[in-house]
Length: 293
Ligand SMILES: [Zn+2]
Picture 1: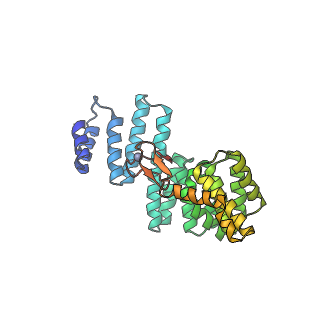
Picture 2: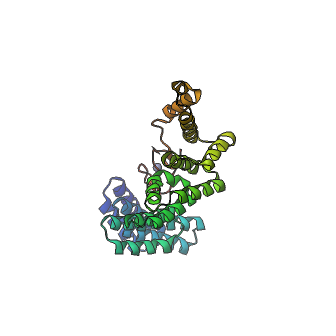
Picture 3: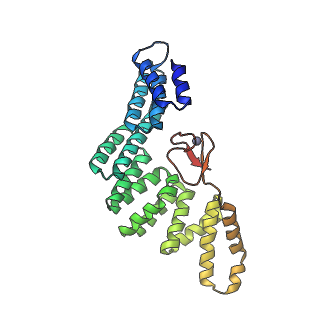
């Protein structure tokens, strides 16, 4: 029966697969683990985007693993992170419909499941942003990127807008500088340069860019941003035409050519490449497997 369910699933006959697995689950068959059946149901509900049912199936997997003692604690954390994604999907749907009361309920449940989820922090930022509470959205977004700087690729514009609307651009620059000095992270470094390009630089950023170019091992993208910053500074100070033929300008342009069309992210599970960070790989549908390429 289990194999039949799998065949239906593979053929895309999801409702038939669902009823086979449901029947198997109710039969309390001792030859097949309940966790395996619930896991199969979970993948069906993910495809049909029935998130409440997906949560129920994941809870069932969690319970069976605990009961069989076959769980390692890593698995449960993983399942909790999945459940949190599902609650966030539900909250996101409600937010799009403007149903804020429902949003709060889902957020509460997500918090109780896995409060360290960066997806949750991001969504809390989105809710505040939607309600034009820009100081609040900025603080949620900052918390999210301090946990995981890869999120800067998807959050930079919203962080920038939040800071601008709440008159907190300087505060944002200060916070990012602090974060950079703590983790020396290339994404944070690039965000600092991007902000300086937009709002004007200061001595601290000047010193940072110079020190980092001298001492740190940078990604090609960071070198591209940093050389852009230094080049602009030079051209501002020396506006004669000859400065444009400068080696630095050429290197910057060459790095730009090199990076054109190169995807920044890659799924660790299936190798699919993409330009932006995504919670779920669009090719293999695994959650939290997207990493920097
Ligand atoms: Zn993938």
